[in-house]
Length: 114
Image 1: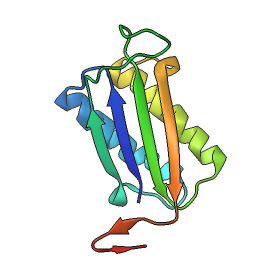
Image 2 (image 1 turned 180 degrees about the horizontal axis):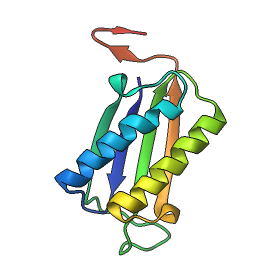
Image 3 (image 1 turned 180 degrees about the vertical axis):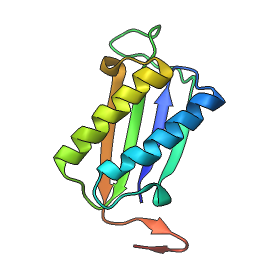
Image 4 (image 1 turned 60 degrees about the vertical axis):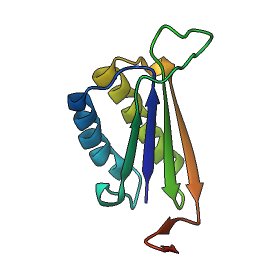
């Protein structure tokens, strides 16, 4: 049950969002046991953001929420992919992207918890 929230000061067109959805759907498999079939995505483009005191250059904050735990190497691989996508799809440089991972043992769906 992964959920990725992509917040950015950059604009995201419908075509770019589709490209991100497809790429993140594949990339989530870098985390053992995770797949696109349970992936929820949320995009928040054109957010007011400042990073390192600079509000002009685009930035992004990507939150990856996971049910259960993930190995550090898998998170490293997913972070690399997210930063690559930020640059290639939205023009946000990797050094202007933060990726946060939250892992939990309690996750609700369909009226109950896993």
